Amino acid sequence: MASVFLYHVVGDLTVGKPEMVEFCETETVEAAIQAIGESTEAGIAVWKKRSVVGVIENNEMRQQRFVGILNSLDVVAFLARNECLEDQEKAMKTPVSEVVVPSNSCLRQVDPATRLIDALEMMKQGVKRLLVRKSVVWKGMSKRFSILYNGKWLKNVDTTGGSNNNLYHNPNWPSSSTTTSRDKFCCLSREDVIRFVIGCLGALAPLPLSSISSLGIINPNYHSIEASSPAIETTENIPRDPCAIAVVERMYGDQCKIIGEISASKLWKCDHLAAAWALANFSAGQFVMGVEDNVSSRSQDFCLNPNVGNNGQTNGGGSTRARKFSSRSMGFNPGNSSFGISRSMYRGRSAPLTCKVTSSLAAVMAQMLSHRATHVWVIEDESEDVLVGVVGYADIMAAVTKQPAAFAAASRHCEGGIVNEIHT
Image 1 (cartoon, rainbow, N blue to C red):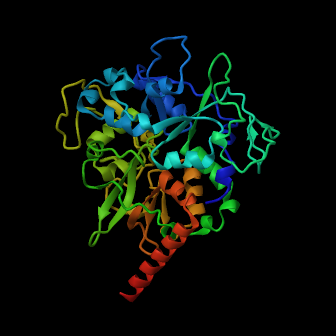
Image 2 (cartoon, rainbow, N blue to C red; image 1 turned 180 degrees about the vertical axis):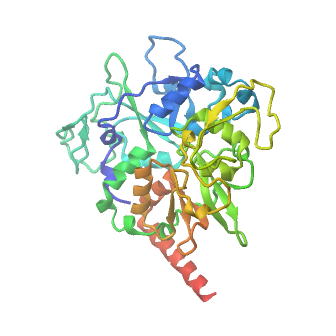
Image 3 (tube, one colour; image 1 turned 120 degrees about the vertical axis):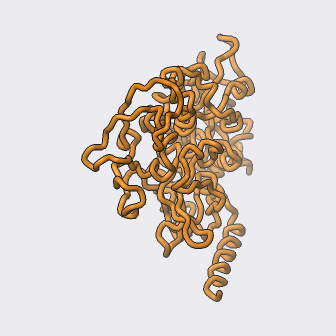
């Protein structure tokens, strides 16, 4: 484990982060769609209103008000319900308390002086956001590094020496109880942490150049759906980490080929109503490929009755007003007009983000950050698009905090597996 995680603190990552504005659970789905689109991440934190206005909250009271994280896939899955398709105006006015999945453990409030290694451990255990106070007057630093906080290099206030480098427990630094008249917080996501980590690759050497297979961080327990299955089936059990379902085609044996994904990051800034209609009426393969039946490549917009599915049967008894739908309005590029033809030639925005089993950890982190994705699908090195597993934020954090002995053991295990496959 690199010393950079021991001597840096959470406060280092809050420089330049905007103040968090609470999104209340009484807000509408329509407001949530706008907030998600304007956010820097693929989801927003949802809060309960303060029971008593004017009372200073402690950490426990604030934690109890946190409901969960609402993302685009949750919204699209809700709007794809039959009752929502029948009355979309009513659905858009629904409070988000009826949509968000309660998960109070997804967020934790921490002190700016919390060691980065402690924050990584929290996120490895399922915490997705860290709530950090911005209005605290904090002048802490480690013995070894000057901590850049609030845009200034601060002098060491701990001149007494000693061997304790744990910033979180040092009694010589003021706690976050020293605040201004109004508490200000910012939210740190796992993306923020990975962005910091990728700037410290030299301190992590040689781990960043190691393959993800040798590190043992490929997760084979991913969620998937066959391309021919109705896309609406993905809403029956939406995975939370990562919030993504691979759309696959079965090959020989137990192998499958990934052709796309249905995820919160892919639906981040799409037309949620159009995506909901498509989710309810298309197969998973049609949904991710952006295929539109009976539409020429020169005409991507056409009118559809939102109550009629692909089979021509009425899906509910709501309004028969026709509406516009296009693959581009969902964030997809137009594909081939016949699903299953020349699919390998189509690589639009709906193409899944993939890497090889031999890809380095640094390369995978760079992919995730450049595409603002929460995960990367892992495919075989020689067979194109044969899905092996997925790598998410938690897997990367487990790799960068792994002890050297554990890393060596994982490498030997991987090498042994490769040798056995060669002999067999």
